[in-house]
Length: 207
Image (tube, rainbow, N blue to C red):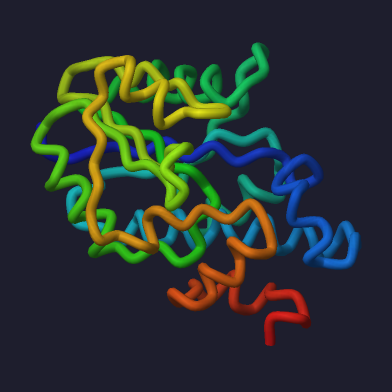
């Protein structure tokens, strides 16, 4: 159906993911990888439970991530040869060839399906994006039905997406706007309510 969306979720290899969170796990690579994976699993699990989301596909070259996503029933596509987040998203969109495509960041461990659904409804078929809580980044980008995704993720992506013609969606969606890059972000997500994977992988200082 034209009002349903297929979401592409890019997930870096766990040794490269969420480097600014390394201090939260005391520099332990095993704990850090577990936390990074948990963030992605909770994000994808919430997306799978969202009405209006037809399919979720991850873009990753990490076998551990792909295996865990497969356990959720989610297909993973390998990252393209050309590096970069936008390149990965374009690769996913081209592979899926969906009527409507969206890009969801993989670090939304408090994501609630009702908030994601509300954002999808608010888009009203337009190419649109949801800025992060600081208003500078982007947590969700939606193509118009039959249209191009045209991602501009990176520093200042909210402004870049707005200048590219995407409509900014601002709503009471704290869990959708709370991406986790730092310890402060993790504490804020914890206050909203974490998914079970991240709650289990939390560093000791948060409990």
